[in-house]
Length: 259
Image (cartoon, rainbow, N blue to C red):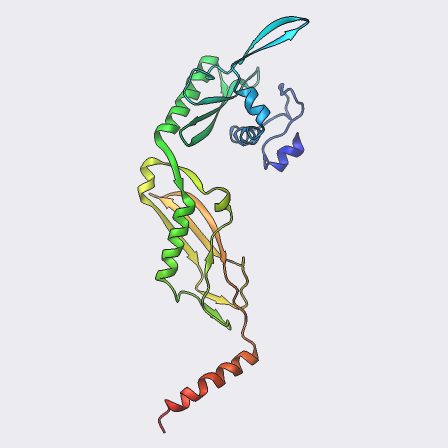
């Protein structure tokens, strides 16, 4: 379990047992529970179990009805899981998955004094999220921003000893993995980008070499930050290249010279 936690990047989680009862070395956070839940929901069996309201099993030939303890399942629009929890140390906890339209969220409430508080807090958080946030295609925004910037700044880069100054920028690969971000609705119209690039570069430059950063923000709120790298290779001029350039341009210089 701890090996899997490390694999998932859960640096503030540690497990001492599979049952989860109170222990000083058994801990996690609300955020990391959400990450763990997101991973678990990719398992179709887990997804089916946490979304099942009731189920009948047979024990010693007799049917036994089991009911899901998630009080929101079947009672709130879009709920499809996940798990309730209680120990004396943790109090009432609930991790909820909810999807409405194309927005899919995970809500985590920990340490509630009562089941009623746990339910109310979960509903408030879920309704607030769907009311105030919507998906924003950050990939399209970054692609358009970089294209416009490069069209407006074709001679921005100066490559010392470079065979060319035509350096093109490549966006962070993480955009391919997460092209959509949830953003507060009132911030979307004022989303803007800020580039941090050094115009003076030195050859050779290879593809994937780092060039700078692009910050995406709105009304002073940082939304995302991406590393920018070279999408082209600029070789370093050799002595042979300098000689070729000299003989290439020398006749023109002679013709334009005034004696």
